[in-house]
Amino acid sequence: MEGHCKDTLKKHLLQVFLAALYYNPSATINYLEMKQVSKNVLLEILRMKKSFKTSYEQKCFVIGITNMLTVFDAPDNIKDPGTISRLLAEVLQMLDQIKKKEGKEALKKANKQIHQDEEESGDGSDDDSDVDDSSSDDEEEESEIVD
Image (cartoon, rainbow, N blue to C red):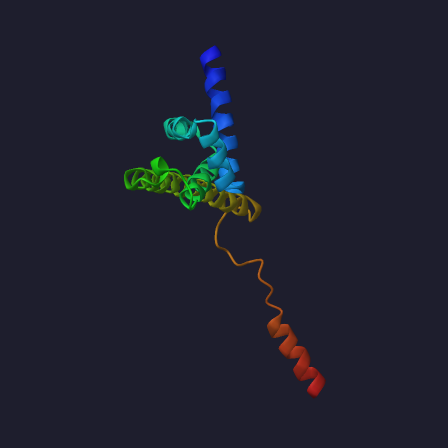
């Protein structure tokens, strides 16, 4: 239980850093560098990324990491081509997970809506019995008025 609490707390703390990277990436990186923990925080974010289950957490990861890559005066360990390549690969992998997850959710929602629509229409057949055929009545009334 204690290990689970530590991982949950760590995940939420890392989410705070990802949100800070979204809000002000330069100041966040400078702060992490000042505390000499930027490399450790980045490694922990990458290690814990599988624990980011909700769309919000996953999108914070994507936005935070991509914003970090835009910082002009980032330290050399972040500007390293190998680091940039790995971070971009991680972002693309997370985007793929988000796409799959949201696609499944949209399909589930659509199927639920279809099921509800079928229940509301009765037997679910495509019978157009509820369509108003008053157009022929209107034509008869118009012809009577003209006569």
